[in-house]
Image (cartoon, rainbow, N blue to C red; front, side, top):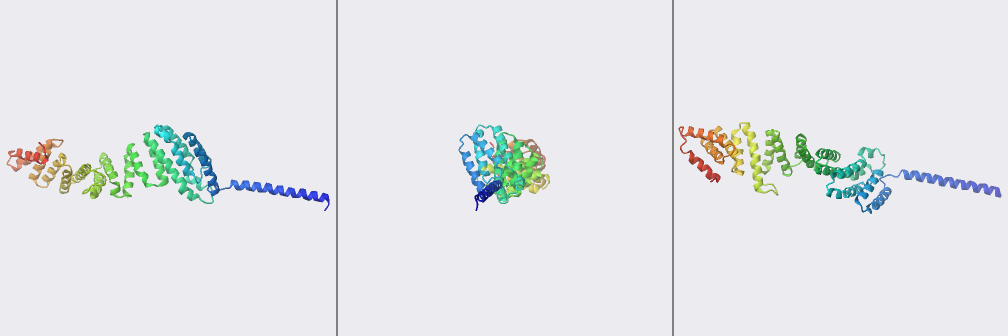
Length: 362
């Protein structure tokens, strides 16, 4: 082989090597560009960067770095780690009750998180559904729950409801419903409160949700829907009419039972079922022996059921308790007593004295 030929061959060979090297570099660069954000390789890189961010001791600076990371890499297998650390960075502002700062920072983080549609359209070959389930939804729930709490503390109930509604729509997490119901009660938006309350009741037992049912009954009463209130209270009393719920004092529950049976009795009385109403009003005074309105309606029920003497005695109790119904009760008591005693009121003092004695009134 001549020297010229060797030189030409060497130059050609060098050219080929250089071209191959360039091609390899280009293909390697292209490969790196196509690395999945959910690959183990990228996870290690992301986690290493997260470890560096955690070295920052100033909470605000660390929060800024975490936010910058999410803006750069919104689809990452460490998204939940980053979100949890970010919320932790807000504690100092929470302790100062600087809710404007807290909500602004949480809104910024929320804006950086991708939605499910964006993730699904990213064309990631493997791991998309796992990312949505294990990272994205828990992160969304965390941030929206924290945002709801911050707006709630700031008494911005409209924004709190907006964040809570969004959280429930995304996660369908039933545990979020009581908080959402409470927010609507604070606004107040009683229609939405009752709608959420009905959803809670439909998906849980009375043993679990009796306090919600009691509160909803109060709202129905405010809306002058006595039937709906009575229906709810009836369900509670079906379970807890003869027993006390766990961790509730009996005296407190007696007051609740008296209230519940009173509402139920009023609804039945309005329907003119006097026998059933009498039965319910008698339960009222069993749990609250000095409910003068109950004695008044016991008297009315007994009168309707042709028990005039029993009506006189019930009216007498309402009279001696001397409250709202006393004047009306006295009139009916005297009219009935006269009818039973040839127009005379002789002996009525003894009836009233007996009522006082039985009620422990001096």
